[in-house]
Image (cartoon, rainbow, N blue to C red; front, side, top):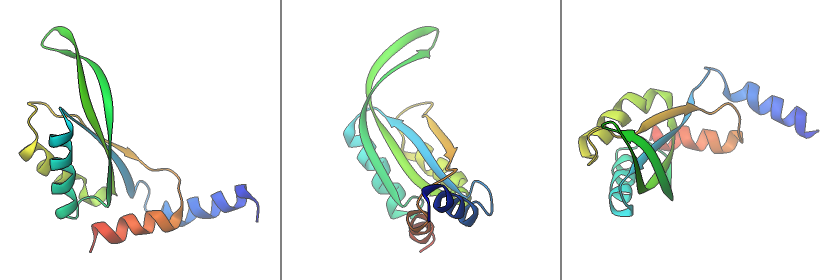
Length: 122
């Protein structure tokens, strides 16, 4: 089978219902807070995996452009977990206005995506 055919099969297999799988981006002020948030979400089974990476951020805050070294959490989950995930992050996040952005996964390796679902619905 060609790569294009394989991709089409994977796409058709997991996009019912549409946007079932999500990547959620969350910033935190440092590695300690990032790991605390990641572990909390994992223990609650709201995510299957969280990657934590260093980030240099620039943003508007209270009328000024700010710069900060932060960590970026890249979490994988399912759409039905998003509301609870947001609630949990807000309850423990040190920022007044935490960045929590969900992006739909529009393609991927079906076995990995099924694992995401299994781990968040265990």
